[in-house]
Length: 271
Image (cartoon, rainbow, N blue to C red; front, side, top):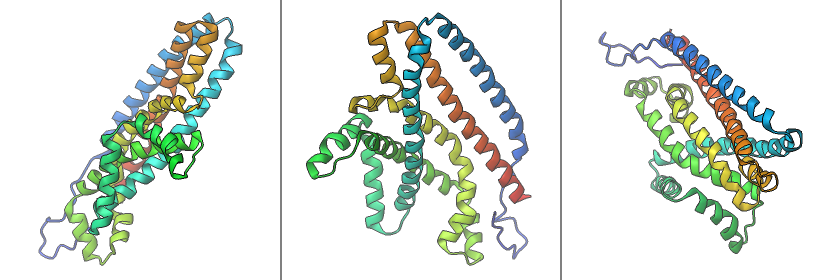
């Protein structure tokens, strides 16, 4: 739903700019073709690599277990990151100063320090305060909190980029703050959030390699362990490179699909 302010004087003061979302259809097709082409090239490279691995049937299950750990960390970390980003963004825009400063502190601390140090702090320091987390939970928390701090600025910027007329129109319709956010502002802001969130999700996926330092066997660490016994660095790490590429392409495809879906929905709402 997009609010339209009453035109008491017949002016277009609060009119929402018309955006041709249909023009994005060609771009969506182009992106899909690009993804298919790149995936095909890497699939061909993966086939050549696999053909050269005489012990492929013995190695692949171990790598797939590492890949599954990477996927689980990525999915749960992304969910936590989105939740923390929205909480921190609304906290930073709050008029209650303790809430605002708490949100600012979270954003600045997690953006201004190393993700690796944050991971170590959660795993090695928290037990000194009586809080002991298992490695998987620690990995999800570290990744989600770190990326959520960056995502908070994405959420805040997208919300504040919604035309001011939408806020004024919602007020004219006697909507409460949260109703306005839920029904008017956030649905429009989501479309602007999707592309940067796609980049953040891919960065989070790549950062999962850090969890090997707290005893979790992710895809990278699985490849490292396998190479210690097989001594086939070129084949093993090239295969892992391709596997990371497939995961990142899946994330990119999902975010582009979400962007096109939201664009069509917003265009229908404005129609």
